[in-house]
Length: 216
Ligand code: 3NM
Image (cartoon, rainbow, N blue to C red; front, side, top):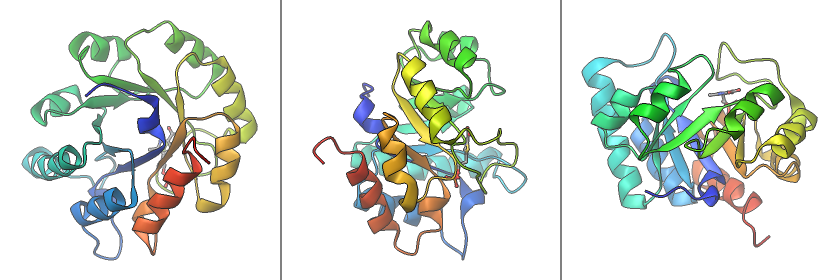
């Protein structure tokens, strides 16, 4: 699948560890798709995460849902799993699989790269295989144990201005701060808990999508 920056508008990130109240990730993803999410990242991480065959099995189900919905299915930090699942893309952070290795091994995939500082953005600017940047956390987050300090919307604006690539904002994004994120020039919002913990997942997804639609 060809990368387009509009795919970053409402970017759902999740793994089985993010499920609450007995929710199942395939059901949550289906509902988020019905609400209009534009991309999904499969991120099994942390002490509760699945591994091995269970991770592959769940990944296959999620992959199929994204294929049917024609939205990119992106795997976090694992080129091999991305290949096994025939993913559209792979996303890596600064301390994950080395970006040079990912570019070498997955030049045909959509490549996302997390950058939290201006120096990291400047280095990413010259990596032509990198399609988009993920920057955060914008606000304090409950979903990532080893998150960097929050950069705020002021920090995000500086990163957006320095980047030649589209940036999707992540970390602590809620329905109440979507407009603030949009005002920085970010291409979209990447969220875990906003959707996984939403009372109404479908309507929350629609609200994110609408916040970043160019028509509004
Ligand atoms: N990466 P929530 S923050 C996966 O700063 C992730 O790179 C971050 O979850 C980064 O939407 C984060 O619940 C967690 O805050 C995002």
